[in-house]
Image (tube, rainbow, N blue to C red; front, side, top):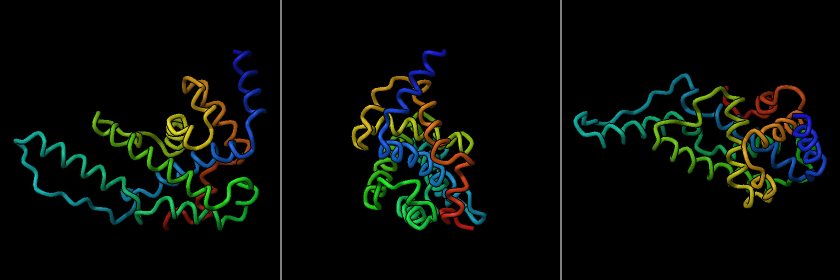
Length: 195
């Protein structure tokens, strides 16, 4: 156990500032994505079309549609909204000095595209990444998507670390280093979530 901690500390010391920002940006993005779902709005009412209860395909299609409606973004532009909120945030330059706005948007788009693909696959297996609490969702989803998109995001070394038990301590340490208090506050100050 001590050897694992030493390895994590060694990895943390060797991570470039830019890579730390990418790894920190992922859970921030996924927390924002979780909080911006239509299901979280007071006036959300899904539109249920005709369902043929004798046709399993019709039932499944309706289930997918309801899930998609509930988890779609409030304004259909989660990448733009979070990118804009972060660009206006008072500590943006302190948290992301190595990622300009274009790079930030590019990272967010890659995260969102890969997540939507993975969420569709999960739905086909009758489960969802959203089946957890917000901060747990943000960290665990960030880990999975960073691992899958590591080459596209320029953090290929993260994809080479096998096992979430080995990656999560690194990701959590970076979040704690960048923002020692609850990181949900970062999004609230940036108006990522509608009131």
